[in-house]
Amino acid sequence: MFERFTDPARAVVVEAQSQARGLGHHWIGTEHLLLAVLARPDSPVARAMEDLGINEDAVRARVLAEVRAGPVDDAAALADLGIDLDAVRRRAEERFGPGALDPPGAARRRGRRLVGRRRRCPPGSPSGHIPFSGRAKKSLELALRESLSAGCREIREQHLVLGIVRSDGLATRIVGELGVPTERVRAALRDLGEAA
Image (tube, rainbow, N blue to C red; front, side, top):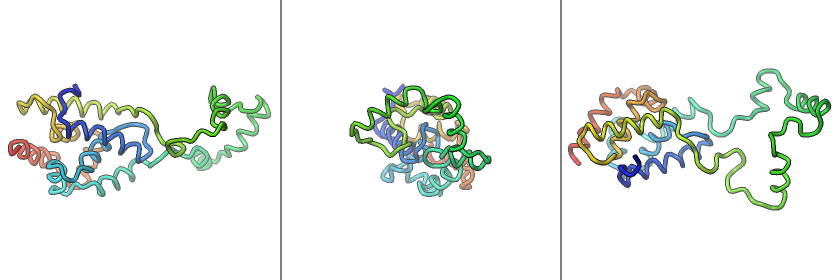
């Protein structure tokens, strides 16, 4: 399907990965796709969204309100539940031996890390390929449908946004919270498509 994407639409998908990584998220969701569209201010689609009152700062603030940035601090989460992680670790190691709670292979990885290798990303940051969430995948499928229903042979940026708002993911909810009905987005992007 990606062979049908225009260069700007491909750039949005690549930027979505950067957006997810920048927020410390281990998935690419509809919210990251929307942020990626809005991060391209010279794009006619981003300008159309801005005209509707949907901008990168507002969407990012809503994403951060919904989903914490970065990795979850296990010790803090357990402390909120009244569990002392250090005490649990100590008891487990007393009973089952040192490193009892370490993931498999951690001792080997720990040994290699001490050889002086530098990490490319901050600790806890997602690295490598970040997978698409189910709703993000669905939004890409819906973008293809939007493209086909518009009589296009290629998937453009506006088709990505139309797929995003049809997917019923976090991005759709955020657009609604910003006071913009989905139909206004659809109308603005259909008008944009006819002008292009």
